[in-house]
Image (cartoon, rainbow, N blue to C red):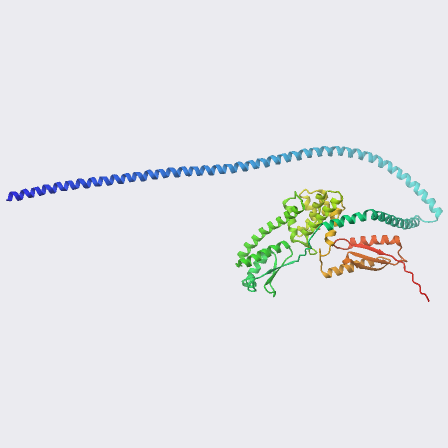
Length: 522
């Protein structure tokens, strides 16, 4: 019995040992499988990482190459552009050098010619001096003889001769002037009137009047306080940034912008309207909006100049010239928009030039640019005619155009027919009804000055300024002034008006002389 128990125990021990070793072997196999599976996964992750790294490396290399190619192309284009510019500059310099060499050769030839002429003139001067000495002796001898015969001193004889010659010359000159005027008027007056009237009828121009202030409407009166800001900081910032005065008064739902420069006043109006719409009004925002308005104004100015050139068919102007033309859209003269006036003058010049078989495009160009100096006369001292001429010389403008600019107010002599057309068209544009306006006091003062100027001449009985100061009618005393003297008087009055008065357009001087005989029947 004991033996059986021992045997059973031994078997149980053996079974337990076998089960232990079997279990241990299975656990080890399971652990080895898991370890191998983990190693396989690790190898797969490493391979995937290496593959992604290779892909990223290739992508980075491709991007770097593309960027390099882009930079290389940009550099090549820039180098090509600079090369073309250098070639053009070199060609221009070569042409100028050749031109200078030719001019130098011409100057040397001219210098030789002048030297030869100087020698010839010196010899002639010596001969003339010798002959003058002989003539002086002869004249002195003859004067002594005449003095003995006439019993008059040379000064008395000269005075009497001069008086006689002046009187005779005035009469003959007046008669000759009258004859020339009548002939010229008979031949040219009718044709000139037809050309001018045809040009006026064919030129349809708007009546434009501008003011020196801009009014900005507000959504409500509370906005005035926001515009002023705490202790006035907003309004001060706005005035500093724009250079324009902001007038906030009792006018309901409106503020007034006042300034000398119309371009800056327009910038201020645009900026203020944007600030009101946006609602954010403070110094920093004001500076930002004003800066944006200035950039917008540059575009508006350029487009206005380009539009004027396009409408008239005037091409080839420098961008700076077009920019200043656009500025004229915000400039007024006697209330008339200067750009509209310049376009009207250009159209009239072109129409009259076509009738006269002249270059109508050159005439239009002269008319469009005749007041270009008004766009920059606030920045430079001098008259707008001289400023405009100097400005266009910098851009190599045609000599006829430059002469038309500086001579259309009679400051310098006119060269060719185009300045005459510009002066006539300028007068027509400024003289038509509604084109211009001026303060009432200045208007009345000009009329009074015109009448006083005519009354200052001897023989004038009455003088009346009519046609809004476009004509002065002078009634003379018929006993004192004859018909020929009337012609001289009209010319003298017109010349004095040109010297002493400032006026738009032209003034017609009419001298009236009449004889009245009165008898009474008893």
